[in-house]
Length: 533
Image 1 (cartoon, rainbow, N blue to C red):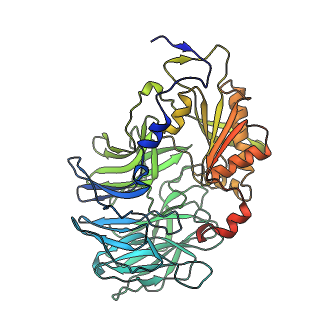
Image 2 (image 1 turned 180 degrees about the vertical axis):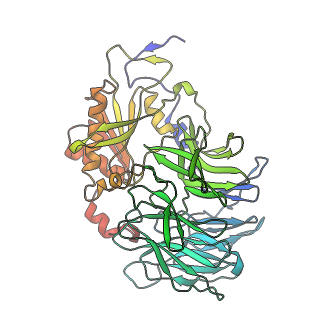
Image 3 (image 1 turned 60 degrees about the horizontal axis):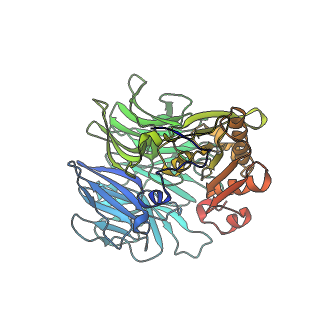
């Protein structure tokens, strides 16, 4: 094929707007029940309905959530942890009425909660007492804000739930020990967010199902605890950023032991419920996912030898920490620079990686796909920041000699989230047309330690904007971008960054804010409880 010489930004591409809009589903909330794999699909083609999908070992896919239902909870508004499954029976929150339903195999869903304004999330089975333990958010009370508690729900009859724990502003991650004798959970209070500071509690479960005296075993105002997990033999493990990085710890006989200290993140900001970055493969081994310099790694941690062994795989992005282990196999939702977000299975013996289901089919050749470069660049007051840079790429075109490409800066939402490195056609749309893209993990992003995450405290609209401006200067100085042809875009919190960059700097010639924040005072006054302080 003879390559045409055409200016950057004018290249023709097979990645069209119709392709972006018509073929994508979002994958989340991975579960394994017996030999079956489940996940939750957000389908734009079905008016944004969330559908729980079952995959049989032979690859057969079945929609479990029937028409008229949508599996999604509104606890904290961002949801997550909306369903669980056992022996083929699915329990889920329905978006329209926020009631919690039981759906037995081949039967219609039936409600376990009454038609009142209560929401449920992050549930766990208590098999010993034939109940589910769940986070409840009560909007029926005449209080300034909703009231959050931990409750138990009967698996057979309808009820609002029996309160087990109350008194804190927020709760997450109730987890029952294997023998059902102890419950662990996380709490935090205004004005903290869960990535600022949380407390980890445990209590005995009494014969009548109520809890004994609660004991706080870790955490504080300046320590974020993430994902308490019980080992098969009833020991408690969790992630904490007490050293500045979310690392793994073991609590035993009143003492907290670091398992494998390193400058990497074995945790995530809890914008939603139900994320998991480590799970037990056996009593002595943990399969874990951690991020270092913006890229995810999967490893096996031998607890006896205190040795971290990499699990080599092409997957370098783990979405929402959806990690599960069953029968010597790792299941996760993730991807890579050449794979979109997908349901993935990794055999721990052979290390073979298999894609079980993709969020979108790959319909464009790899020759059109721009591979991101993880970059570190200088920013204000001697600091550095991070980004993924996607250079223009199209096998049919070259630019005129000496021309530098225009550049689109992407500012992610959150703001305490991070840009993924998976294949996303919404980025390749631009690069295949001759426009470079830089996806910025500005100060405040997750994946680079607590101090980096705290850079945005009282500096939202300042530090993030500075980093978005400085990355353009860095790339322009290296001849990788035209400093006079710069655009910026972002959604939600990234939309606010975009608006601030356009309003308070002269760097960008154009920008687009998607559902962005524009009035911080109004946001503080009118937003939901989770983000209200």
